Length: 227
Image (cartoon, rainbow, N blue to C red):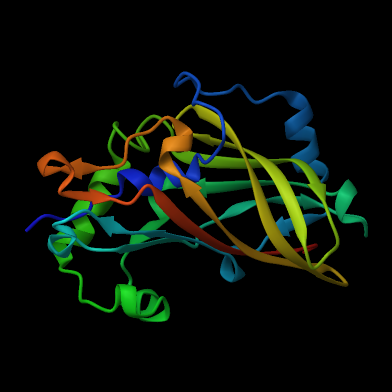
């Protein structure tokens, strides 16, 4: 049986409106390192999650599976002094932290993910995600997300972010809601991204009779604390 192996879903993480650049790792400059060292808030991985929903498509879609891909091993920092427009952040998403089709997560996502996913479909999806054709995890162990600008009120903010996946650099606007309390920040939101906007071709077999849908959904919640 055919399994949808997530070509789209990694595209999502490199989401942007421009075409990907060459697969070269970006050098870390001293200014970025100093910003990280000085950041008063650190990402709380126990309270943070990145979740990616990938959908099957095509006349023979019933032979494939929708997939829920999640990562709860997130790291990074936030600089925030009471005004969102002046805030900045950087996130790291380790490729080794991805989990495919956790049963509880599938139930949380409703009817479109209600069917049972065989173990070989889960392992096959993860293997293909980590391959050189997608995440290239052997050469690029992390995905990075860095803020460029933040605008809007706390209940309707939008962050423009730079995302680096396997050496591809791109930008995306991400709507989110921010909650701030003494010593702690929490943000959550979701965004849809088209693979074709990244210059990538959605996974497809049998001349497109079975394929991954062009649009992918990303859901996230991040928490950060001063200690």
